[in-house]
Image (cartoon, rainbow, N blue to C red):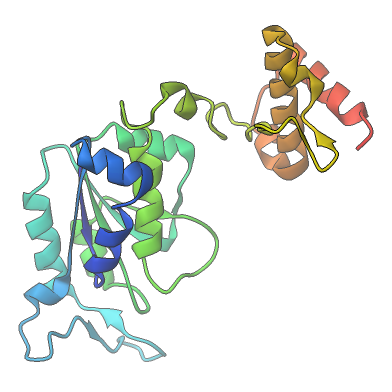
Amino acid sequence: MRIEVVTLFPEFVAEAVRVGVLGRAIERGTVAVNATTPREFATDVHKSVDDRPYGGGPGMVMTIEPARTSIRAAKARLPAGSRSVYLAADGAPLTHAKAQELAKLPGLLLLAGRYEGVDERLIQSEIDESVSIGDYVLSGGELPALVLIDAVVRLLPGVLGDEASAIEDSFVAGLLDWPHYTRPEVFEGQAVPAVLVGGNHAAIRRWREQQALGRTWLRRPDLIEKLALTAEQQRLLKEFLAEPK
């Protein structure tokens, strides 16, 4: 996969993708991430990329021409079938399903806005869809772009050391993840649940599913409401809720 990020701070994106899972994926050639700035295409002496909004009000708006030229140059480097995404507070929520959808594409162009946003005509002419990472406002689209990149790249074949890691993540089955433990078995009087050290794999699977159901019910009941729970899942959840907390 090839990812092009159009941003006023390309050095920020370039540095962030060098570490961890993303960095290793880039080193192996599984994904290529490039960041460019519209300032390269600004024509005035000050390399301006923003102007006052029509209609008045606070803040500035990213202008069309430098950003459009930068976007089109980036699109020319992407394979056919790629998609352009604008990271914006008013975009559709970034979900695991959306990350799975984007991970199937050969390439992505990500536009990271700044100021009060970008000229709407640029979005209408150059962008396929808008995506938001949450119901809050950030100073710019760079962090959302990096969140989207990480969510997508970790789903690409061969990126994670164990393919089961992506399959067992939160939200894959519509549920939050279950609790995880490692050594030592007892830490400051707190022991690992006995079922996890007993060696009964069927019991472990049952416990994990029950914990995932229970955590989701407690922390994200909206997710439970979207699921058609099986009779076994309903039984596991009922048992979880009956346990003293």
